Length: 318
Image (cartoon, rainbow, N blue to C red; front, side, top):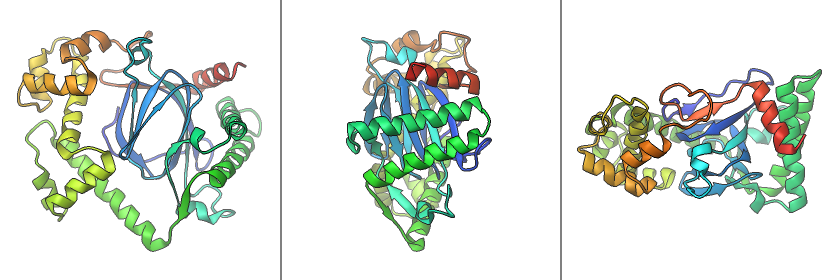
């Protein structure tokens, strides 16, 4: 899994549209310039967008606005062992340049991220869900003229989004301000990624960004819904989980290599975040997938087109 970053989306099949099915244990904070739709196929997950948390299950559709910082994790529900299986979701990423020649405001639209169930009627929700799955089947199967089917379905689905989701169209000055904020967040997250395993201070980042400590602290709370220190501790716990895959490493070694001052503090953070100690976490969730293990330290499994098609067809009962 890549570190937190601004994700650059590539479009291998259809210009300005990318689709994939992903089985997730954890995807850390990231942002990208595309709109993203998550249609959950199986399991339960937790999606954190800026400072809001969404719990989602099968059939839920989450719309994530361009530039919104978000992370995804499996649900901590031990009764149904959903963390062990993980949510499997269809992801659709749409560039804000999609059909810009015909609908120019898409380039300057800012939506409010959220679950589409809260914005659409039951009938409209069923219709938009079918449009997304129809687009996915065409995209993954690559039958004749599939590009036209994909563009047609996504265009109609976006029409529902525009009619029912809260959004505003911003001017170029506002857009440039948002782009500067994205660039700043990329620099800050990259700095933390490079230094979380050693002593790292809010004051150092504030100096680099020519900001006051108070202002930078506000940026963290508004963007991530947590303090700077909480964000750093989460990064350290993510590293702990990566290193746990190496059975030769002791938890004490993992603690120091992840930047924790001592193992007691690491234990405290795991109990707060996951409700269990690192030892218990390693025992419960050390092996994540039922099949062949993914590469070490990887907490998501992106399906190939054939398996993606099967997952979507199974979801719709085809």
